[in-house]
Image (tube, rainbow, N blue to C red; front, top):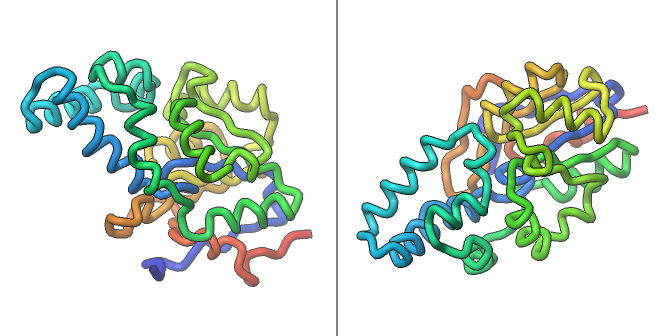
Length: 231
């Protein structure tokens, strides 16, 4: 799909580190949305003997309550809440796991340019394990950091402070891509200079606009001839 807006013209000569979200940025969020909007509520309804609509309402209320916290992303919390096996449910939809447009090519191009490429995700390590089994995404980057490693989500400034101690980077010479505007706001507050919002994280939903940051859909657009000059 053609992007609604032109891709940002990045100053690659001024970028040393590329930080990337995983779900909705590198991998198609259609998978996660199907698991969490369909499979988890159905399993919860079965486990707790609830009507389907009541199960969905309870889960979405809990999501709203926890949004922005580390528990929102925590498999153990959700397993205890629902009584369902989260890993099993993720495997059940594994046919939907896949890279977003241009994502794999962008990772390989960026590493080929000598950039330090790091996934910074809120995904639970259990989720990461399932996705890596089908995409081998861990092999395509220099490091993978889950916010669960630090006990704080990317929405919190402590995440970026701890990340910098484990993987030193210069925020002024770093690029960060994410589909979550709240996370981009946090990254901006931490001093990261170059920020891009993903306009269509879920391939089954419309492309978004007016996210407050330069947007991109197909990551090929970030390293086309006119954008990829680098010393």
